[in-house]
Image 1 (cartoon, helix red, strand yellow):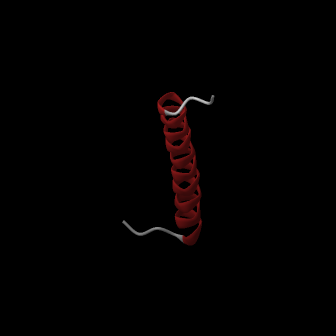
Image 2: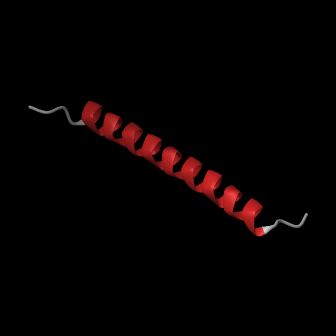
Image 3: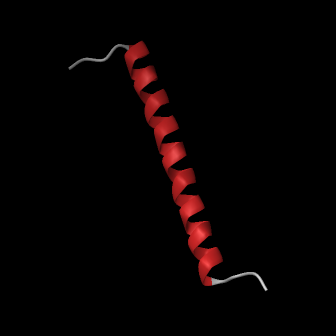
Length: 41
């Protein structure tokens, strides 16, 4: 399977956006767990 430059660029764009959203979701999960473990006084 040979990708042209435009296909490669589109693939990188979609993968980058997906990874960014996934990492943000993971960070929100970590923050939620930290808030439940250490509640603010």
